[in-house]
Length: 297
Image 1 (cartoon, rainbow, N blue to C red):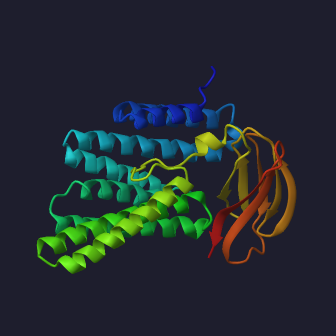
Image 2 (cartoon, helix red, strand yellow):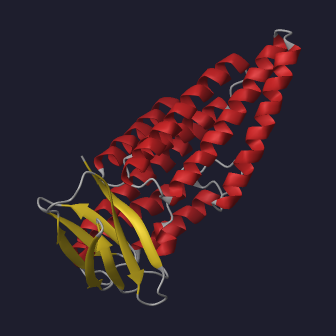
Image 3 (spheres, rainbow, N blue to C red):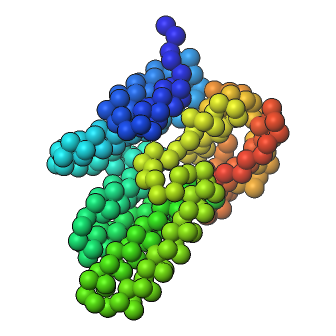
């Protein structure tokens, strides 16, 4: 039996998200999760570790989309249960724990922007900023140069801009006009910074992007290495379409080839503490990738 391409189903789930069809998006994410699991136990078992993690990720995204759908239906308690479920799944993964705080930040931001009372909105936005900062810290612990760090920074700037705007409205309502104007000016400045950041990372300004990962896009045209620590080794699997050559791991020369959907393991002996990076080259276009893969404590 031929298994559907799970990355293609992931892309289809996002296409439903773009038009606000969250229930259909959730169904596609569930299907993608099943497809990743089936592929990881079948024809692409060489990258089974990575595909099983993707399967969990798809289940978490399905819960997020279900939560958003329920929220639109004013089923707030059920929506919260699904967001909580998603957060728990994110935290159970090796690579995507940072999305727990990130998605919570997105949900809190969306809720805050619908609050009419400026003081309550300001307090909710403070919580939003804290959640995004927590997500950035968690991601940066593994890879401070990860492209999503800039996406999170963009959301932080947006949230601060909205918080300053809410503060400005609150001050104006209390008749403190001069300070209100200062906050308003600061808000507009941060909004402009957010817009520049968003365009830089290819995101639409002021859009709350619950599903920022783009692995589905990258695997279409490149090799893509994902790592998992084991007892005394680290496992590297190539989930992309092209062959890659691993040049270095933790500044140690490796010089090993990983074919698509295959894996290699490297010893973790004598690895110094701190962030550990892997450098590899796509054999097809000779593009070099320098990515964080774990932090040694």
